[in-house]
Image (cartoon, rainbow, N blue to C red; front, side):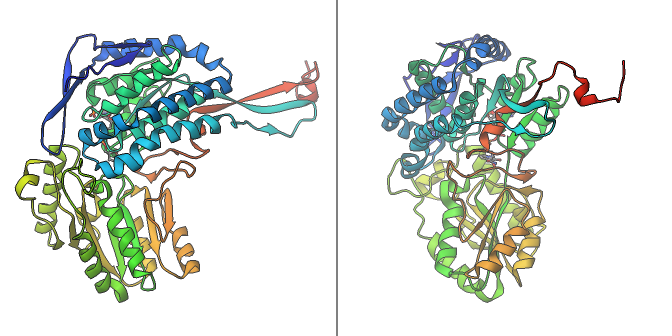
Length: 493
Ligand code: NDP
């Protein structure tokens, strides 16, 4: 509580211009754990001005030099990981077993991966006119605005920041208000690493003021946003007046199709892990299960047995598998979805009741499984972002694929079968950004991540991420002094 969290503007670790602050609470018990600057539009102006001032210098830096600085950030992140792990857990409830194995180590590994990847960036050379050299030259966008969510607060910020920097952009980064602490710490490491002043600016404050001011600022050339689909749509509307590019990673309502010939144990493991990892607060979590009739009863029985073993509790306890949701309002929302599903006739197979005892004080929702007969139900169409999922019996894989596509989201889905050819044909039918066979939620730096439909339009991770932060200028070098060698006699002056 005593730590003095500062924003980073123009290389200075500073306060909001108004000196206002806002609270960050621990969702496991509601205690205030920190106060952070509550910025306003004047801070956005300061941050964008600093990023604009740093733009030409950073862009002119040799990519190897930028890579060296990213490696330095990675080194500092690695040195501070033991400090960051409990902060990450306390601010959004991700169990320490997860933040210590995934969230925090990911941050330095991602900086290292992107630092190397960026040095391989190339453009095209194009054959055509023998009197010309035609090519594309990669250029950074300029000042990019990065707006990030609270689930995986450091992971989502680093996944945008590292590629933005290696490709020569300068940045204004705004993390989610309920979980900004590790990103503010990252600001300190950026400074310590010697990244030039103004290249990275990190500000905190409400999305509907600070976030919108970043999106509408004329000095910002591109937005890269991860968050809710409704907020994404608002950002697209705001960006439309300037035809500003927006990259978006939005919500998901992801399906898992389990066929009669699936490995039952493997499929149940994948389902339970996917549904309840990080309390279901993953854009890629499976939350709709379409299970073929021959295996349905056995699957349900094993799912319930396995999910009942998920330990729910204090996220600081290394034995805890599932912590609270990120804040109290998320619990209220999840409970509303549960009540709506009951009212709509879905049968509770597991959970469905508020937690008792100590857990009742926190933002906890217990693993909940509903049996559903109508794919149009809210439970099967809307992102709940909680450990609340629906299961439905299907007659065939084709029916499962059709039900999967019958949804406005298109982030990811999986098919579970031991008949690989059948499985691969089904993957082809899915309108999603990532389609797994006998796997779900496997995401690594080397593979692209991004959705279709209302799940957004971009790619994060992999070599494709570099496309999001560069654009390709076409350059034509005519090798004859007379341009008519191309125009021939079409126009004679
Ligand atoms: P939100 O959309 O509520 O917030 C995301 C960020 O946007 C926050 O920094 C928020 O600020 C800011 N914001 C809110 N309103 C505006 C606005 N009007 N203009 C500009 N910025 C704004 O998402 P959550 O933080 O609740 O994160 C959960 C969502 O993120 C889920 O829908 C999930 O599916 C999605 N997500 C998608 C991923 C993907 O890869 N497709 C990955 C991870 C998450 P503030 O916190 O101050 O409100």
